[in-house]
Every structure is written in structure tokens, then in C-alpha cells.
Image (cartoon, rainbow, N blue to C red; front, side, top):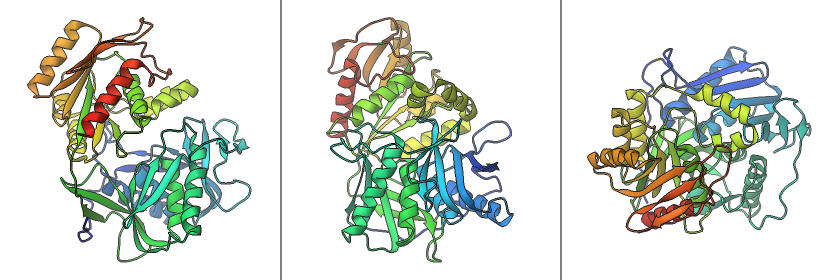
Length: 444
């Protein structure tokens, strides 16, 4: 692989792509919307530059004065995590980021014994609690290793742990690199792989002491045959936050699978179960990626949060919900088009609309989830119009007690039972068979 020159990106317009407000001692963050409720078009470059600009503006105006602890709540991308951490860690003795799955803030950086790294602050009571490590784990929940001059990170989906455990394992992994002499520091560090927001805060806090600038791989940008890295933090004039670095990719192959069908069939539950099933396979591509093609507020966080804190999940869904506009569809289609991961899974809304036609046109394979033969026929025709091969037709039956598999090849057909919110479905037989099929497609 070879590197191209750093390319500065100039922001256009005055509307920011991100929203940051300080309420009491909590920083409320989210992706920006217009006055009409439409999402502001954004990419990783614009977001990190806007995050840096807004934080610096709040510091200069005296809104962010520092102190013992800062709590951060809202939607944050991995790229923005690095920028937020770097811009504020020097102001506060501790930073804690919300984890809706736990109903608590998790401390991701700390220099005070009052708030140890990885401890939880309960949303409602504010109680500070340390949860013991999972000492029985055979492997850590978060890996990191060098691949040339790139630090590769990876969530270990073979173990099921909470966000605070991932924080501990990220810290331990970095310390191991330091102790072994593998982390020597330098001008620029490139990071690639799947991470969490909490782990990214830890990485930024620790690694910014060793490197002048950190560039993080953005799977939603770039061009065919190129991996694009975005500068997320810098304390050198040689690199500016928002600059990009392109690295030639030796191999380019991707399978992009769309989960489609009418509304109220359980697509979000099915998507999350399929995601879990693929992650748990030892032969799954390490760069497997899942996104939502719907502006309905059901992010990949929703299912786990709903299982533990259903009222909070519904409240956040309402806050995050946006309108399905042509602008949203065009932006989502572009995200899918330029994605270079070897296996991508995404879902779409339940209408055969021009917007979904635009988004689904970027898929390589389709999976239909429906309740009746008529619905299947309608969505088959819609996929045929897009020249999209349908590799699975699945009937959703809320009242059934077991899955039923009719055929596996050349087309998977069957029934999946009880796709109900709040229930884990990744171990359902039909979902396991589909997970195996998608992994095999990506490995051809």
C-alpha cells in the first residue's frame, strides 16, 4: 500500500453538521438538523472540523471552563470521539460518556481517584460505581496490533461484555503496546478497524501523548481502491483536523446486502440478530459493517438499549428520528456506494419509494422479509426493477414458535418466528443459516 499527499478540505457554507450544547454539567451532542427537521448533509471530514470549531468557540466564550468531571450525552461518531476527547481532556480531570445500554455514563479518561477509569455514573441517581472486570474471559473484548504502519483495532464479538469492560481492555491493550516498546510515538498515527465510541475516547486520550496527529479510517468515504483516513486530532501545523490521507488498497471486493420489505415485519430486530450472528462466526470478515438506511431513529444501539431500558430507548428514538427526504436518500446512497468493506449489511424503510430505489440501487444482493406471498411478490418485482438478485425470501411470523427452513440454495426460503423488540434473535436457526450464506459470499 502507498500513501498520497494530505488533502485539506474546505468547509462550505455556515451551517454546522454537528450540534453541541452545555446543559448544567453535561455536554449534549448530536448530528445537526435544519429548522425543517431534515438532517444536515455531513461526512466524517465536516463533522470533525465542526466539532473542533464548536468546542474551541465554547472554550473561548467561557462556556467550557474545565473542572472535575464533564459528562457527554448524545450521538457521537467514532471520528468525532477522537476530536472531542482531544479538545477537552486537558480541561477536565475526568470525562464520562453516556452508554444507553447501561443507563449510565462511563468514565473514559481520568486523572482523579474520585472518578476511576471505566467506572459508571448512573443516569438517574448519579451514583459512582465500579464494576469488576470479567476475569473469566478467555480473550479481551478489544484487540489492537500493528499492520505495517497502521494500528489495527478490533472488537472481539466472541465475548459479550458491557462498554465499561471494553474501556478497561482498550486501556490494557495500549499499556501492553507501551510496555513492549511497540508504541514509540511519532508524527502521524493511522488507525483502522472496528471500534466503539467509548474505546475511541480512551485511544485518543492515551495516544495523543505519543503522536503529533492521529488519522482514523472512515469507511463511508474514499474511492474505489482507496482507504481514506481523516485527521481527527493534531497539535502540529503539518496536519489540520479534517485533512484526509488516501492509502491505496491492494484488494477490492465488497458484498452489499440490503434487508428490505414492508413495514411492521421486524426488519430492525432481524437486522440486529443477523448482525450478532455474523459477528459471532469465526470466519466472518473482520471489516463486516452494518448501517441503517432508515431515518427512523433505530440505530444499531436501539435493540440492546430497549432490552434494558425500554423507556429511554423510545425517548431517544423520538429525538433521533429524522424525515425521509430525497437529500437523506442521496446521502445514504453515497455512503453505501463508496463503502469498501468486504461485507456490508443495511436495511431500508418499508415503502417502494423513489428514495428506497436510490438507496437499494447500490446493493449487490437483496434479502426480503415479509408476511405474505403478495408482499413478497411486490418486493421481488421492485428488486427485479433494480436488477438486484434476491438471495433470501423470509416470512416473518410473530405467532410461530419455531423457525422453518424450506430451501437453502440457490435461494434461502423459510419462516422466522417472533421478531419482537427486546428479545435476542441471533441464535434463530434461519438467521444462523443466512449469516453463514453472507459470510461465504464475502469470502468468494
